Every structure is written in C-alpha cells, then in structure tokens.
Length: 312
Image 1 (cartoon, helix red, strand yellow):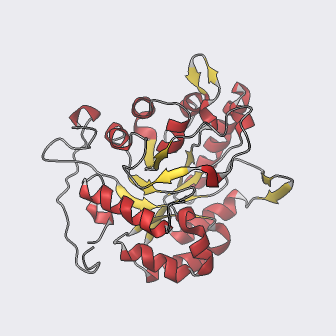
Image 2 (image 1 turned 180 degrees about the horizontal axis):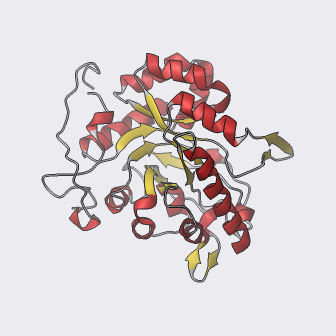
C-alpha cells in the first residue's frame, strides 16, 4: 500500500449508470461511473476496539479508509467523535436500536436507549442515517406485525428529521422467510415506508435467504442507500423456522470476491447506493484486519468504490 498521506485518485464522475451498463457485473459504462463511498462496520473489529480504540482506528486509517459505520455509539458518542477526528475518519451511517422496546439475549433482557438519546448521540457523531440492524424473526412472520414495524420506522423518521437525520433498516435473512401475496415480508415492509427512509441491504444475508440479490435490489430501487458487501460461503439459513440457534462462529465469511455472494452484480444493480460497507459477522481465517485489508484492496483495484473515501 502507498503512503496514506499521498492520494492517488481515479477520476470518477457523477453520472449514474443503469445495471445494463455493467460489464461482468462491474458498475461502469466505460467513461463514467457513480461509485459508493467505501466504509467498514466497526462491529467487525469490536474486540479490538474494546482492547484499544485508538490502536484499532489507526489500523483502519492506515489502510487508507476515511469512512466507518458506527455501532454501540449512544453511550460513548463524544469519545468516539474525538477518536474519529484524531484519525481522520468520519461516520455518516451507524447502527442503533429504533424498532424494539428491549433486547433479549437468551434469558437476559436489556433496555434500549430512547430515540431522543439515539438521535442526540448521532448528531454528536456526525451521522446522516441511523439504521436499525435487527428485528426479531417472529415479527416478520405476520403481516400485521410487519406493518407495525414499518409504522414504527416511519414514526422514527419523523422524529429523526427534527434532528436533521434520516433512519433506515438493515436486513438479515429472517425478513425473507414469510411471503404475503407472493412477495417477501421484507418487500412488503419496504413498500410501507416513507420516501425518506433508507434501506441498507446486507448482500450476504439476502443471499443466505435464497434471494436473487441483484433482482431484489432492482425491485427495491432508490430506497437502497447502503450495501454491506459481505462475502463468504452461504450457510443454511440460521433464522429459518426450526433452525438450530444461530452461532456466528459457524459462518465462513471471506474477503470481497472470495465467496459465493454475487457482489459485483449487486453493486451494479444498486446505482443509488451511497455506501459500500465491509463487514464480517465472524472472520475465522486469521487476523480480522487482514480480511478488511483484502476487501479494501479488491474493491479499490476493481474501481467499485469511490476513491474519495480511500486515501492511497
């Protein structure tokens, strides 16, 4: 990798290609391309953040990254903002609970922060979009429950707008188990959202659910503002009814382009996506930073992301 202090940028213009402009799944029409900003979800390196926030962020910045996606930020927003600033990082998206009244881990029940506290912390951090990253599987099996979840997110969007923020939702695979009228619960949910509500589509989990991911993205349209460009070998759906309890360490997730997820085709199918976010739920192949670096290198080499968010 070159000196992070010296940028070598590939010219990228602002015109938006259609998926049909893609060659072999690459988002390009020959002379111009609209590419999303490259980011990394900090959940991927959560143990390293706990061991040493500055050391972990310095390693990301040393890869040339300039964008991160925050998680667990509500109680520590000022400290995170100061750390991001020290390392030349920005977080325009972040994950927080908006749609659940409590979080359960087995028999343990944990309270969640109020939406006002979430939005105040998001403003401190400089976020643009606050994204709820998980709604329990049982709430996707009933059409009335799906409608209630959409209504909750719409109400959160109205409150967020008072803070100059947007809200969104990030899928796993449970959103695709049930269908209503021949359409997945996730798409029924998306149809009921306000125009200003964003979707962050996790490509690995949508593929795990058996979706034709590029086709799904085409149906979701401009609401897709972010993608988790997550690769790996696709497991049996751990959120399907009757599945064994989900164990993240069972996942074989890999750097970009080394698994079974149609990542390039999916990027081509989502020209509205503003962020391409690297994430690993689990990385069993060694040092997680090596996995992140390999993904950064592949995405930059194939010109699938904006070099404005990567300093080389």
